[in-house]
Image (cartoon, rainbow, N blue to C red; front, side, top):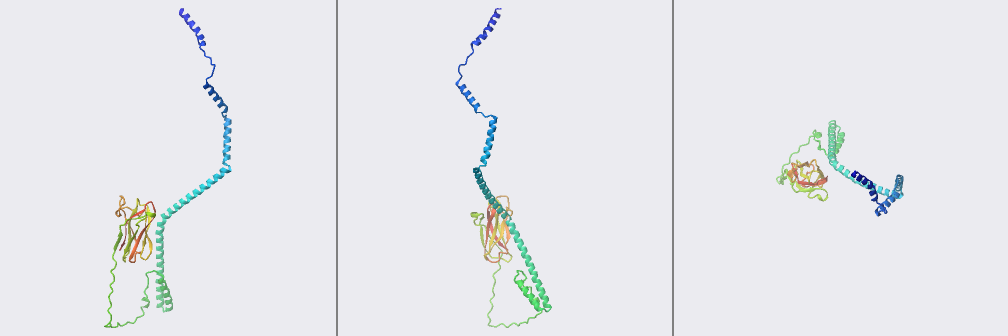
Amino acid sequence: MKKFLILVAFFTLLPLAVQAGVLTIDTEPPEFIKLKQKYQKQKKTSVTPSQYKKLQQEYERDTAKILQSPSYLRQKTMIETAQAQEIQKIEKRYQAKFAKLKKNAVHMVDRKYKNLLDNHKQLSHKAIQSQYIVNLKRLEDKLIRAGDLGGALVVQTERKKAMQNSESTITGISEKKATTHVSKPTRKKAPAKKDSVPVKKISLPPAAMPHVYSSDKRGFAGSGKTSSGNTYTFDINPTEKGAELFFYAYGRKSNDSYGEVFLSTPGGGKYPVAYWSPDQLKQSSFRDVETAKDVIPLKVNISKHVKKAGKYTIEFLYRDGNDALIIYRVGIETK
């Protein structure tokens, strides 16, 4: 019973003790005052959804307006004009490069087929002209046999004229046939005079023998100043069987090189006689190219240009490609 009374007294007096410990706020902390003032200020300056939408519309309107202003349009036109000019210059530069690429690519093919067509045309013209001369000769003989000497003379004049204008090998389809029926009077040989001067025998020089004229001088055929030692001169005594040009060459680092070979003759002529390209420049093995033995030579028949004794010059001219041409050995072989 005593314990019960103690507990009742404890719980009865507890609220009074708590009430006695409650604090009263007389002043607000400075930090709290500043934070509250800032919050109130931000609330006043905050943008509502309707205000934000209006502001966005004003921004779009002002942007469109400035993009249509005379100052902006004038500067835009100036920039677009400069851009068009720059693009035009770039296009012209690359068009020129494409044109050069195409020209170099088809140059060798054009030259090859031009020569072939010219040769065919020339041969065809010669064949027609030669046949014309043969037909004239046949008609001339026919008129002579028929006793029409006046007509035969007209045909003969035309035939001789055609032969003079022709390079045909038919140089005199024998006039002997037209005159075989005319017997020439035989002349008796006059007795040799005792005091006649003896005729000296003239000994002709021996015929030229086949020979190989070559040079192992290393030359370079490139663009501009990269070309050096790319000409070779030989004093040649031609033979009747013709001559052949040969050269051992390769690109500086690869076979990506294009160019032409010219031959200058003693008579002052200069002729393109050969060319090189990646398809022609080939190695004899897979090792690096360092000497003439490492490449396969290129050979060209130049008989039609090598006719008389004298100095002949071979010149290598680079046209295109990533590598200059290195010449290891050059020569002309007479047959």
